[in-house]
Length: 211
Image (tube, rainbow, N blue to C red; front, side, top):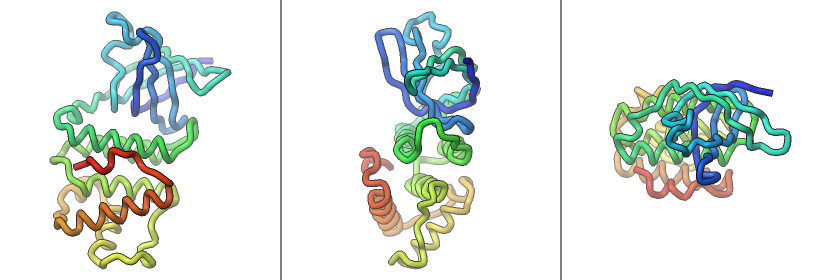
C-alpha cells in the first residue's frame, strides 16, 4: 500500500553504491526510515531532493518485514538553505535532530515535536549561533517528553531558574534577543547536560562541541 506524508529529513546514509537510506520526522507518522533506490545515480528522479533538513511531501511503500520502507516519490517544499551558510547552524540543527532520534520511538505520531523542530530550524538562521537557542530547544523538548525540570526543587540561582522559565514559554524571536552573561551560559550548559544525562542515560556526543 502506498502512503503519503510530509516530513523533514533528519539523517541520510548510503545503503549501496546507488541507494540511500533517508530518515524522516513527520507529524502524523512519527520517525520513518525509507530507502531511496537509485538516489545516488546522477539522473535519479530523487536528485537534488534528499538532503539534511529538507522538507518535502513524499510517498512510500510500507514494508511488511521491517521498519525500512521504499521511498516512491518526493515533492520538495523547503531546503532550509540558510543552515548551510554557517557551520554552527548545521551543528545545532544536527544535534537537535539526534536528540529527537534518541528520545522518541519509530513510527509514533509526534506532531508537537515535529512543529518544535520545524520552528527551531526556521528561526535558527535569523541570528548568529547562540547557546541559548539550543538551551531553549532542549528545555522545550524535555517538556514535550514529560521530563520538564521541577524548578522549585532544583538548586539553581533565581536568575537561572527565570531564564529556564523564559526558554520554556517564549517564542524564538524573543529568545534571540536575550543577553546572557558568560556565567549564565556556563551554569545553564552544566545544568542541562547533567539533567539530560540523568534522565536519558546519554546524549549525543556532539553537544560538547556546540557553539
